[in-house]
Image (cartoon, rainbow, N blue to C red; front, side, top):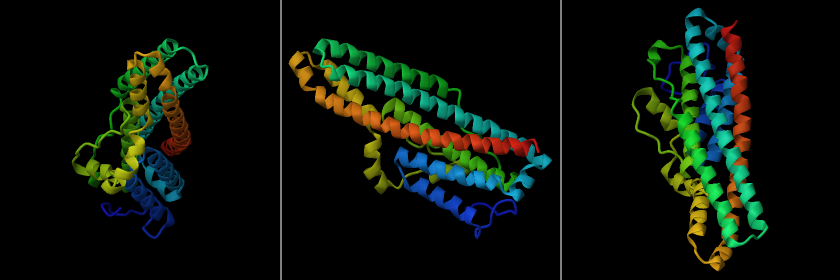
Length: 279
């Protein structure tokens, strides 16, 4: 990461960990798919865990003057775990509703009975969105600090926190709206961080279509289903609705798997920071 001055506490460019760290950041920058970005975060935090296990890193962060910063990183890690928990709860609730609606559709009830199930699904989605928005108001991105006054390892870990926050924010936006959140224009070091996860525009055109994805497509399909007045029209539309629901169910399962793996690594990193703080 050329914007920083290397210190003895962080691996030099020739060290495999430093090379891996920068490679993971490049991959995050080149991907616009939320699935790929979650996997990229997993790789990035795995690398962070290895860095935190280095004796030089532990000695540097255990210094008295760094303990306040380490404590701030711990607060940030807790915030990221909260965001992961919010996302997992929302995905689980949505998946359960998808499975319930698919079950009703397979039983081939009359059109009006299916419409009642569809309305329950849409009401549940509305509740999920409300819950996410309420919880998200209490979560703020990490505050920018003067890099020159920070230990380099602290700066790097704060950048990782900001990158992770950005991806989680995009995921929650996807769950709410069906589209990943557009990145805001930022200044200072936060702008540098946001650029790490900005997708290449050419790649975005190819990948984002799959992300504008099943959440939004299902709601459109179900709203159209409700709008049809003719029972025959409703029944004719069942197969389309079923296909959209199955695609959403598959996407949710993929997101859940990515979040679960990432959460375990976030917890592992948090334990490492706690051990350093209590050293």
